[in-house]
Amino acid sequence: GFTAVTGETGAGKTMVVTSLGLLLGGRADPALVRIGAGKAVVEGRITVPDDATAAVRAEEAGAELDDGALLISRTVSAEGRSRAHLGGRSVPVGVLAELADELVAVHGQTDQQGLLKLSRQRQALDRYAGDAVAVPLAKYGEAYKRLRAASVELDEITTRARERAQEADMLRYGLDEIAAVEPRAGEDVELAEEAERLGHAEALASAAAAAHAALAGNPEDPEGVDAGTLVAGGQRALDAVRSYDPALAALADRIGEIGILLRDAAGDLAGYADDLDADPLRLSAVEERRAALTGLTRKYGEDITTVLAWAETSAARLTELDGDDERIGELTAERDALRSELGGLAQALTDARTEAAERFAAAVTAELASLAMPHARVSFDIRQTEDPEGVEVGGRAVAYGPAGADEVELLLAPHPGAPPRPIAKGASGGELSRVMLAVEVVFAGTDPVPTYLFDEVDAGVGGKAAVEIGRRLARLAKTAQVVVVTHLPQVAAFADRQLLVEKT
Image 1 (cartoon, rainbow, N blue to C red):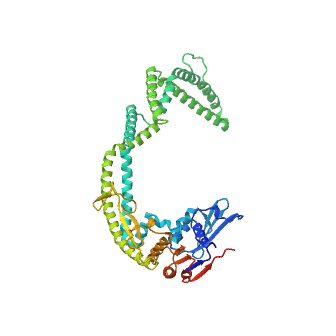
Image 2 (cartoon, rainbow, N blue to C red; image 1 turned 90 degrees about the horizontal axis):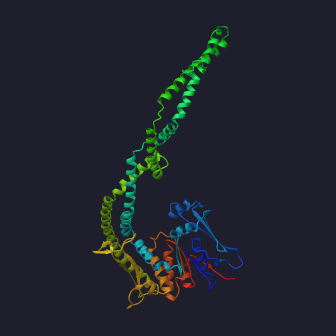
């Protein structure tokens, strides 16, 4: 359908363009808010198929569709704060901007600046070419990503060669130092306990002897009383009468168990005293070993277990660093192979774009003939920039990027004898609008964008040309929604519905 927005100059027709721009993520300018009002609000209802990319992206953002429609609102406060809502959910403004490219194509006096960008002109040509460009472009994109990854890794290895060599030397020194000491897991704890024991050997031996004498008696003092003798006497006294009372018999048994425990403890104390090593040479050796282990824990970990873990990790890292030379060779070969592959794909893209450019330019030129530009000629300049570090296309090393090696520029020769010039330099504002309209008419039926908004596309024309502009817009409206801001009755007459804007 075709909707015409008409009204006198200054009535505010462009407000439709401004509002839609806000609704689709445009910059929020507080000057848009009417003097005395606290905020400006724009609301829109956009019908989208459930399987459309826009619907999927909206649902990912938490929005809900209302009977296949997406409700969008944007609020701008007088202070400049901006809020966006999508399907009942508050979302970042960037989400609206993501949806904009798929939902609405805005062609206003300022929005046409997009067509002046070379990247947009290349995208327009690629879209027109269809699968002829899309298929090799997809293959090119995959190869480009692989080449970028290989180049980044290769650059990192080569540019950081000194740092990596220093890191390898440091790791090698640490591993050699640990290997020279040959620590065992938990050895530092064992040696600490042994050093404590050896350092207090005399006190330990004296205490063990005193405890043994208290439990089992002192051979040098036959008259002395010890715990074992006293307990044995207590048991004998009870054994004499145990048959008279089971309770007393049980106590006698318990005292017997105590006697057994005392004899066992006395035996262990005697063995401890015999085994106790008071050798000062052993203590010196232990302290020396502990000092060597402390040297490791001071540098490589809190304890020997951590030191051994560091050694294991560092050995793996050293193996990786030592393999750099071999990896450099592999990556260099991979990069060269990918560059060669990329060159072939870039050549295929150039060929496909060149063929499509001729058809595209001829179709747009034919449309311009009916839009008051009968002698205008549109053409494409497809070129490459030489770069010794680039890929080979057509026997030359040229610069390349994620979309190929081509720079695509739309040229316009507005009248016979005029040299083709970039549309940014060769077209006035009105001519640029008509070039855009011609491009969109050529795209009609194949362009995925469902809504077009044209602002002042008929600037500077009248009469028969205006009728032809209206006819072209009506043709475009057969396959898409077209909203046109116009002041020409010849254009508005083709519309299916009319909206009159008045300032009161």
